[in-house]
Length: 88
Image (cartoon, rainbow, N blue to C red):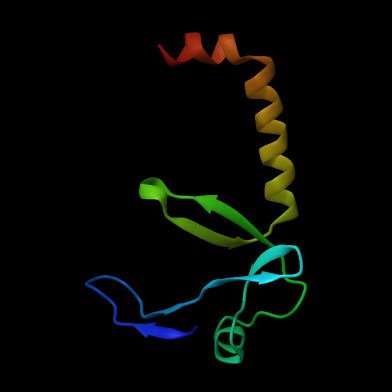
């Protein structure tokens, strides 16, 4: 399913894709047009980011960023009480 969606004010035209069963998993099938437009290829990795309002954003995977976020998560967990006090 690849339907073009007309953009509303301030948005860029987008394509509608659908989750499909692939083996025992679900996946999104991207057309050749989408792959070419965003210069994507098999094996590219993405981080799924949950946006306000329930939106989902795919961001190219960045190993340096991922390592930094893991360090931050460990720090937040270890020093949770300290961060809560500092936030007051």
